[in-house]
Length: 250
Ligand code: OAD
Image (cartoon, rainbow, N blue to C red; front, side):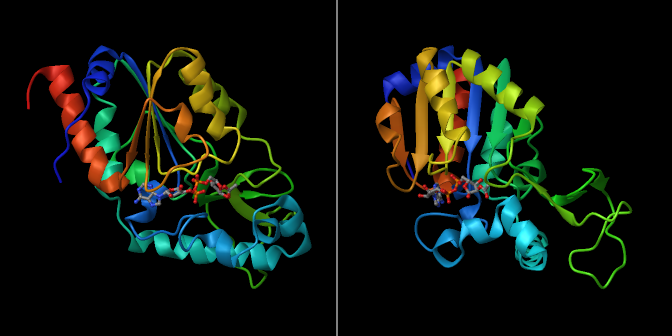
């Protein structure tokens, strides 16, 4: 795939010192993980109210636990794709950089991203739903889900609908949105708050906004540039452009 980038886009990259990249499930689609919305999304077959809320867990902990176990079991079978890898490289080329992901699959870390925060937690971690302690190793138990020493049920360390996002993480993301001069929104439907508002904050501060998605989203109108492309195809080309702009080398 070849691509001719606009001069506005190239100039925005060249002059940017602070770059924020927001990602969603679409960035992992080419690794073989399902998105939530859009073509064959998880929320077509499953009801988020019955699986991704504290009420659902209180009502049917086994069902919720097993759904996350099912998603968890896929992780060792998939690999980061060129989109993840390009985003991991990008952090080397800006004075300030932050990747803010809504994904809980850990693929960005496996691709080498370091300057990053996870807004919705991580599927590979567990915590107690009662005392909140992190559980490193699941206890041997026939009960599903297993219990913490305190007696509380163990749950995945992810953020469910209706729950607060981790405060320090949110603060970092917000701060970066306020100072970024470049923001990429990659593979997210931009309907879940507060992640979707990061672009708005950045735009109000004069950032150049770029969206990468297979289709237009509700927020496409506010972006300076929209690429209707697969993240795994376009992000490596964008990385090339960044390397060129920042180092003068090709
Ligand atoms: P969504 O599933 O809502 O959106 C994924 C987006 O990626 C869609 O807009 C697709 O068009 C796009 N897409 C699919 N394949 C792509 C590809 N190869 N390249 C680029 N784009 C592609 O996922 P999120 O926006 O991440 O929260 O969803 C946000 C939150 O809603 C999730 O974190 C999750 C979900 O419910 C919770 O579970 C709390």
